[in-house]
Length: 186
Image: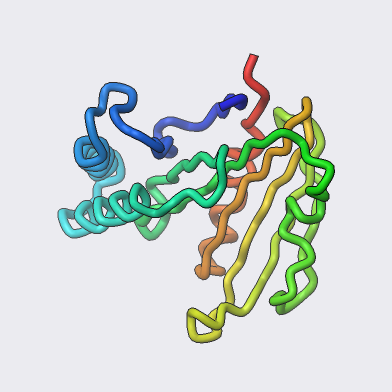
């Protein structure tokens, strides 16, 4: 990875792409350890710990759609669940517009996207919050948030999505902080 992410290690964990990784011989030991430590730190019940473990296992099994995609999981959310962001780091491509990096235009949008300027370790970028109707989820509204930067010959996009619109308000400042912490590695 050509990026450095200065994330809060008490709440965020990097989701490895392959094992062995960082002293963990396999997915089972990594997921078990993360679920156990999160249960202690955030006072999860046995059922909540088991649910977190299932989510971690599913996250590890979920295929990465792009090369250069890295995943980070946020623990200790208000609902004691797990939230995930994906960070794509790729060489700047003239075929990829900044609007496309933000997921725009979105033909399934239910309202105009909210696009704002952001500043972080990669300099000036933009964030787009998009609301869409998900036919696969019985028409439920889904919010997708992309943060995008072009810096040092790299296109960096942070992606997050949820159908929990209420929780998004509480999580957005934490997600903004995570995205702003990304910088180019030395």
